[in-house]
Length: 367
Image (tube, rainbow, N blue to C red; front, side, top):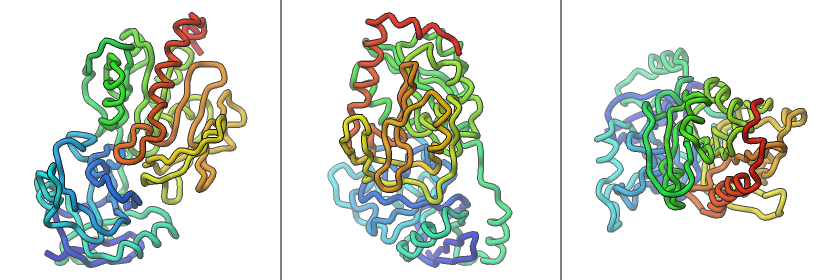
């Protein structure tokens, strides 16, 4: 079945459709990871987006039950150079085509993904549509240009109700902006008593759970579209130790008086080098974000930059100079990607323990 990918600038790619037969509209982005397509397609941070994978062969180890980062994929579509019809892996249960048909996610293969990558790198992310070859390109293009990208992605992917993931260790409240299961797995691995709460949970409701620490998760979209999260974080700073990842990192920056800006085409991949400014060490990291903290906006805050991206110098880590809070833009839980920065979860728990032992009065201060 032939399909076409139409971009808002009028560019048209014709290829082979797979997965769902429905038309789809979304922001077209690219990911440079060589593996991990299952985690990518199930990452809630891709809500509202059509993901193009730059690695040419996708689906060769199939889809299995273990590697999902969410139960319900939020991705709008998939673009690949070649999709494997006969995967070879002992864990494989479905082909890409079979799984995408079940979830009604449309895909397109057989197009020039290198050309598409160059277009996005030159002009930035673009709105796009995957549709049937029978669709009139002029009509699709007109509709595409009139389509507004969603700004409520966090509401769509955050848990609707609080739920526990019991453990006998430290009580960690996870503020879910679109949490990847990898974050929960890392906390569970360390014996934490986890309570996951919706993105709009208030600071008072979180503190009633008597947390030892609060985790701010990853999530999709523009952090400025989540004012509830910014307000809650502002009320939590100084009252409980906090660790933020990706969108959680950006929301913490906004809550602390800094600013965020949209990137031209973002960071999406599993090989991004990040330098720890304190140690000088470089970690290869997994990343997925289209917004970044504005460096200049940090100057008049009580924040300090802890990590930077070596590719473009953007902010990759922050800490509060007065309170026990640190955040990173990248994904220490990987899924997919390297686990170079996995010890940040241990640093979080060590920070909690240090605050308990010191009996720091700052944890009772309201700002």
